[in-house]
Image (cartoon, rainbow, N blue to C red):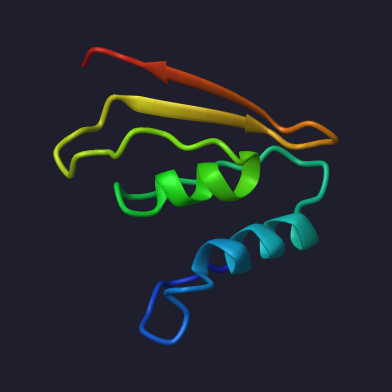
Length: 81
């Protein structure tokens, strides 16, 4: 799958475009999405409807596991490097 880059033309629709592309090209598969502090909260909100705390630019210890379906599920985990 080709990466979808954020730019001035798609910054408002980036998350929706990304999730739609994943749903179209990888339905039923396990997909790893790696994001930055400014995209992860939006992805979690879009897919689950849940708000998460803002992520600092120097914070790297959070993992979110999202299971899509009739009722999307969200698991939040942290690790100590």
